[in-house]
Amino acid sequence: MQQDAMFSRRSVIGAAAALPIASQLAAAVGDDEAWWRGIAAQYDVTRDVIQLENGNWGMMARPVLAAYAAQVARVNRQSSFYARRGMNADLDAVRHELAREMGVGDQEVALTRNATEALTSLILGYNRLKPGDGVLYADLDYDSMQACMESLRERRGVTVTKIALPEPATRASLIAAYRSAFDANPRIRLVLLTHLSHRTGLVLPIREIVALARARGVDAIVDAAHSWQQLDFRLSDLDADFVGVNCHKWLGNPLGVGAVHVRAAALDRIDRHPANPADMPDTLEARIHTGTVDYAAQLTLPAALAFQRGIGAARRAARLVALRDLWVSKVRDHPRIQVLTPDDAALHGGIASFRIAGLTSEADNKAVAKRLLDQHGIFTVHRTGVAKGACVRVTPAVFNMPGEMERLARALVEIA
Ligand SMILES: Cc1ncc(COP(=O)(O)O)c(C=O)c1O
Image 1 (tube, rainbow, N blue to C red):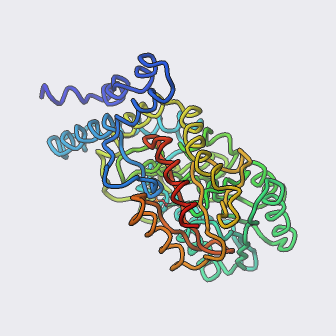
Image 2 (cartoon, helix red, strand yellow):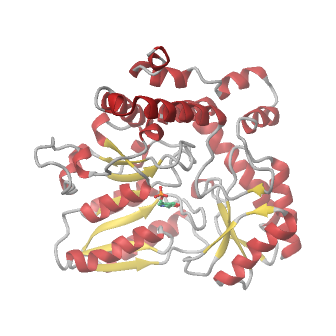
Image 3 (cartoon, rainbow, N blue to C red):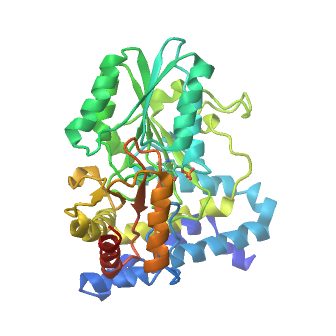
């Protein structure tokens, strides 16, 4: 039992705080690039390629990986003896820590397996739609959420409107796009908003659009899968009633943990999940049913949060933007390279996508990404579904170095 005492409820949280976190490194080195090299050294990144496709999921830093390995060993060793006697209290503590990080109430967050589970629970469980009402989404929203919004046509008898977001976009043109969609379809009652697009990296002015929607009696479901922990904000800043996130992208937690946030006042607008017992208290958790999950991954959340806190949200966001600016600034004025995110600092984070002029098909952009990999050793990914055509997405992480971004810029100029 001595080994297991390491994992008492308090120590699950405490262990994370004791990790060799970034702030200790900050004290040790003065120069900023040296500091970031110290952070990069905490990731066991493949050297086979320059990894600029960090949008699929985020790597765990070494201390997080070690915490996860310890939790896997512990959950495996104690098995049901732990699960039936103390794990739920530990998971509640983890959930409350997550809620505090998000700036929302303890009872306003439930754990899911990913952002998809969080957002589909919201879209499909939203119970205020009546036949003849309308719902709205945009071309840059995530494919499976678009499909769920489309499914409301049959499920709820609503009309479904899809808009193409402006490209190039400005803050005003984005707000105007939603305003005119609401004006043209006064029966719209629900809108899906993606805070940071996985296709182009475009950031929507969520707070303003949520306010615009609310003033017209429209509820907004916010997909923050790519924004939370990439940008410097707390969920409460969005002023949104319904938000879905995952913890395996920018938080760098093990794969398989996400979360849903519903404001207490909006809870009754989401149906309870039918698989939950009828006598389960009427909480947000009664709206989600995951079955058995990777509990070790959930229990690792405090370690992932501690690692990110060690970097600091503002410093992390600024670094990702600086890495993005390094390559974008070198190709922005090239006549054949279109960078799809605007330079307005409010409209992007670290992700940005580009298109070589005239190359708009999926095949074209697959070929560009392949050429970057084959000839320059740089790994990116093509993205489709943008109204004006496919593109290639570049997603730096905190372990990428300025020289890698400069190599990308040189490669793009050569290809273009
Ligand atoms: C914008 C966006 N929403 C939702 C998801 C789904 O996230 P998850 O893989 O956690 O289900 C993704 C994943 O890439 C995404 O980019």
